[in-house]
Amino acid sequence: MSKLLLHACCAPCTTYVHRWLVENDFEVEGLFYNPNLRPESEYQKRAATMQTYATEVGLKVYYESDDQPTEPEHCEQCYRRRLEKTAKMAGRNKYDYFSTTLLISPYQKHALLKKVGEEVAEEYGVPFYYRDFREGYYESRRLAQAMQLYRQKYCGCKPKEEKMKGEKHAQIGQFAQ
Image (cartoon, rainbow, N blue to C red):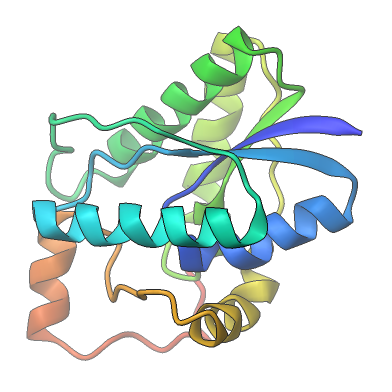
């Protein structure tokens, strides 16, 4: 069984990814590290929801906060920061792999996530486990709803929050590349 440290952006995205990894013989622990989350109340809601989910399913999760916000509209910087923190911890604690729940979202830039994950893996000496989990997106929403988990409507950064307030949500069927 391979030991994997999973960066968790939020509980709803973790539901399907965590279940899939466990069903496929990974020993999973989580890292909730999301310095992109704004405002502070959003961070608190997501952290509390993650704690609720983790307790319910028996997932060990480490929580690390950081008060340095990610620059607006810099997805690569945001991905790199979170994956570097995850890879560092994975290396220090002898995990076989690291990955991220961001890989379930049709709104994330998967090619960029994969590129950054592989670069970070090379730098920190821990393999990045890439899998396109988007096939489980609707299942994760169903699981989150059944568990009554708080579900946010944006990735967490200030520009996306403002964009969500001003326009209707994009079609789920059109996955980001």
